[in-house]
Each structure stands twice: as structure tokens, then as C-alpha cells.
Length: 240
Image 1 (cartoon, rainbow, N blue to C red):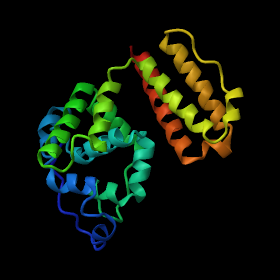
Image 2 (cartoon, one colour):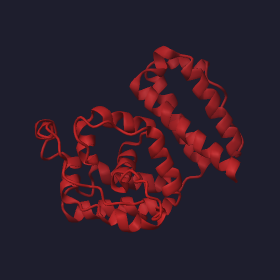
Image 3 (tube, rainbow, N blue to C red):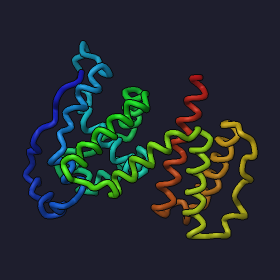
């Protein structure tokens, strides 16, 4: 059941935010000046109104997806970062000491509640438009660049998306150890999504076996994001 659960944070530690999240922080200004209540109206028909069990507030879930879009992270890593990044917690409307949800909850929301990518893009674009109107951000700021990049990204085919993700993953590995090129599998030469998925799986396996490299944050994040995309594509193919 969808409920308007956003409220003032009640915590003995809430003053921490004034110490660690600057007044000019983009996420702080977004949170304080943008009214995200339009999310309730847009997602109203995505929730069951006869089930008495409360869902995680949809505004918080949408904010997670907005952060995911801006910072280009997997569900796992965006939730992980929200454990310790106070600007994230503040933006999400969480108390400093509050525990974060399981990444699987975000994945479920993303797949079941927001299966329509056009709806997600509309919600993100509307948020950005409000932020520009409120003069919180400028047209050349990182959040707009990120959302515009995402819009272009969504125009790519699933295979092109995997190719882009795997390229960024390889690049992050090469920055640490260029000799890894010799260990990587041959790239797919067909236009089949299945072949690209197979290549990505082999690539990920090689990197995972190199623990000294796979645990580097910049590699791990890109590895998790590629894994998420591969799993999404496999699920889509199975359903299709």
C-alpha cells in the first residue's frame, strides 16, 4: 500500500548533517528545495491499495534510482555507499544512524514498479527541470550531464550497453595492470546479445579470479554494474 511516509527526520544525531553536509551540497539543496511529492501521483497505480502491508516509501526508492543514474552505480553499490555517505543519507531522508535496506529491495522496485523506462526517464527529467527552475543546479552541472547521458544511453541496444560496460571495466583494470589484456577472452564478433553476454561472463570470471585487482573499488563497482546488466539481460531473454 502506497503511503506518504516522508517526514522530518527525528533523531538525536540529526545535527551531524549540519556538520558534514555543506549547505551548498547539490544533494542537500535538491532535498530541501525540490518537492518530490509528485512521485506519489505518478506511481500511484504501481501499488496495491487493498494490501495492508506498507511498502518502502516510493520517494526514497525513486531517490535511490536518481542517485543510481547520477553516479552510474549498481544497486549493490548505491545501497552500500548510502551506508556511509552522509550526503546520500540526508538526500534519502534517513536518520544518520538508520540502517539501509537490502539491495534486492531496490532491484525489485526497479524491475517490478518501474518496468516502464519511459516513466523512469520522465520522473528523472521532471526532477531535473524542477531543480533548474529552483536554480539549484545549472545546465552544465554534473547531475544534468549524467541524466542526459542516461537518456542517450537508453537509446542503445542491450548489446551496445554491455559493450560499453565491459569496455569501462577493462579500462579500469588496465589502469592497474595492463598485462591483464593477455588473460582476457576474445571479444564477441557477432551481433547476438547472447554472445555478448557470454563474453561478459567470461571477462568477469577472469577478473574475479584476480582478487588483488577485483577488490579495487573502481574495478569492483564497474564489475558489479556489468554483472547487474548481464543478469537483467538474461532475465529479459528468459521472459521473452
